[in-house]
Length: 65
Image 1: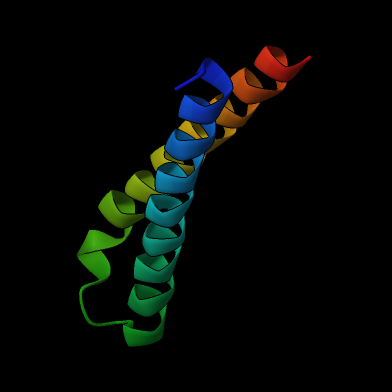
Image 2: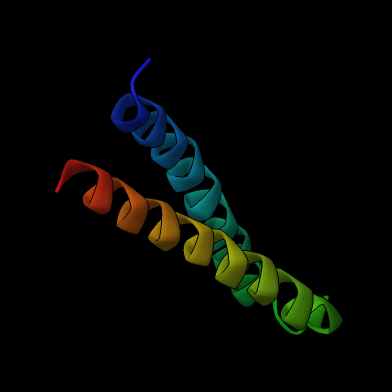
């Protein structure tokens, strides 16, 4: 498998994780004020997921260009 194909597979996985993290944050927001204490942890998980996805996309762009 080439580096580009490997990166595309990684991005697909990271994208799914980021969408799940976004949905977790959304679900938490709809349930407020229940579990309000978990906001920082859930938001941090979402932030990290999108940071990893953004970094992987940048690596793919560099590999393709």
